Length: 234
Image (cartoon, rainbow, N blue to C red; front, side, top):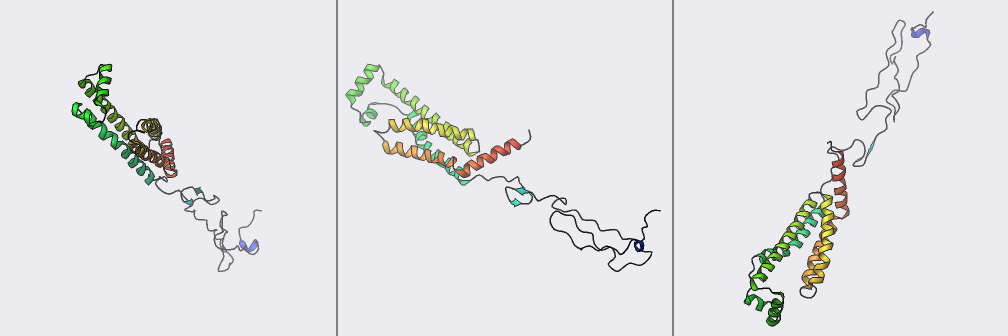
């Protein structure tokens, strides 16, 4: 003989604490007979637990590094370019301005007697040096123009690398730092006797720009771009 479904033959109904449970445990079933039971009444089905909007029952909340407990914020937690990167770009561009002006001016320079007299170099020593080297006035002019072109190209390359580093390329940032050290020390040695203040100022401005690019906010921004590029589908 099977078990009867008549609640009268199963003893008094079991009552449970109503209301949802706390934590990750399922909700307790509520009293199926809040108004009492009468013979012949079919047992009422227990209410089912509604799905949790934040996740299924039994799952612990997840931690995200951007906002703490809860789902990750929209946008993937993208880090905004810090102001240190912009400041570094401005300083690096400012350090190239004197060389841009010098290069453009020298490329259109014509060496003549008046220019040599204004240079402050004793004319007899200059004439003797040119005679020993076999250089004429026209050749000296061409030499100055070539040097001006070299200054201009190097300044443009340095400025272009600074812009690329500003756009988030860590390789360009490293190259700018290396070039600052490679060209900064010779510049100080060459201009130490003639223009020491100018050399120190240019190297200091460029070095400050590199420091800005390697500051903590800038490093976090470059790291976030690297992680984002790695997670981007091919």
